[in-house]
Amino acid sequence: MKINSVSRVLFGSALTISMLASCKKDSGENTLQASGPDTWSRKYITLTAAFPDAEGEAGNGGTMAYAITLDQAINPNYEVNVFNSGYSLRSQRTARVQGSTNGNFLYNIQYTGTDGGIFNKYKVEGEKNFVDTREEVNTEPLLGSAPRWVVAADGIGIGVFASATIQGSKEGAGATFVDVKSTAKIAVIDLNDPQISRQTEFVIPFTAEQTKAGYQIGRIDVPVINASKTKVYIGCNLTRTDPTKPSTVNANNVQTWSSGTRELGTATLVVDYPTLANPKLIFADPTISKVNNHSYRTMTQYVGNDGHIYQATATSGSQILRINGTTNEYDNYNFDLKTALGTNNAVAIRAWRYIKDGIGIVLYTETNVAGGFIAIIDLNAKTATKLTTDNQSDLGYSGRTANAANGVTAITGTFGQFQNIGLAGDNVYIPMTPNGVDGNLYIINWKTKQVTKGAKLKNQSGSFYLGAY
Image 1: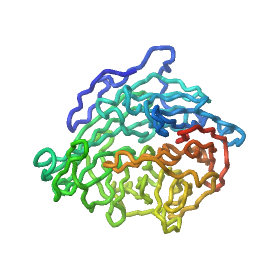
Image 2: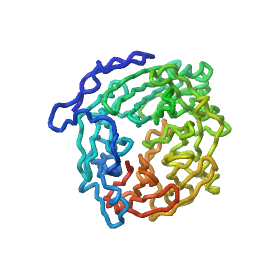
Image 3: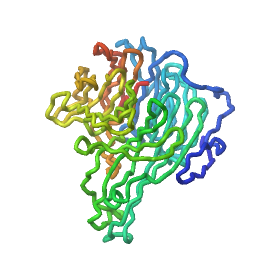
């Protein structure tokens, strides 16, 4: 259901807005009263998969979910057909699904359409049985109908949105660049008692020199809260307009500007938590990385158990950078997957997950090598171990480029929209299916590096599995 409350967003503020009623709890039969936090032991691994839209565009029609036990997950004779037997999550397009600590809840903010921006929470009951708790939150007035959001810490969701407006000397072609202003919006969602607990909007604090040079941020994503719960770090798509070149108009008669050469390094937007006050931009050393870190549908920032933030330059870069847990600044740490693999080809991290004690798992592609691959990485030793699975040659990416102005590549293969790597105990869970081709759930013991080919995953045309929770 669409919630028609409209919250007035106060510029530069950070207000608790439960009284503005972005949350409404249904009193119908399906309501789970006080569904609360995920405090009981894990029962299931939930698999999600995307299917084509009415026009046949692969992976663009919505998302199905199906929950299996840990024993079923590791059984190569067990078969899952999420498209025939699964549960349809609410979303007109591919959902941006998040999971709770032990996998007993799924969360989603619907992506585009009439109900775009509506948050939903689901209790996982096994197989196709998911109970919609009806604890709906309307984030659309602040974040729009296609918000970027993740679970930023246990029980805390954060949604973000950014846009940039260029000021020219006039409309249309032949204008002189004057300045650019980038704006960010942030909403904090209580996942245990769904409601927006705080929100803010502000101008992203570039220096005057930087904006006059054409620097701007038109998209932000993958917010994460630090270990001490005092800061939020948000990945940025940093671009630059060439201020020396006049505007042109495109085929739709829209004013456009030429891109300039970027000199600033990878950027992260930092705000205080929980107030969302004191926004600040921090930049990596540009000699280490200039690649953006705003990701594409997959979480790419994690708090290590050493207190540092580890941040991948995904989904096109090969590096994992570090924000120091004490200084809250980049500290020139640089893990390069290309170097760790010992390849001369360009490497792109498509998704990854920090596990423990500097160990992580990475899904990646490599130019001049067909397919997609998995590696266990050691961030302390800066090493990578490539793992072996079936269908590797089919698991790369293919498809279209969307939102090119924002530097976002939308992919129709397994790793293109991949959203979540499952973790339970010593095991990592990764569903791997090429577009329209059957595959398997792979279970990887991150301590021993043993790979087990688990449950069969039945697929269909224009579809692929994209997450385990």
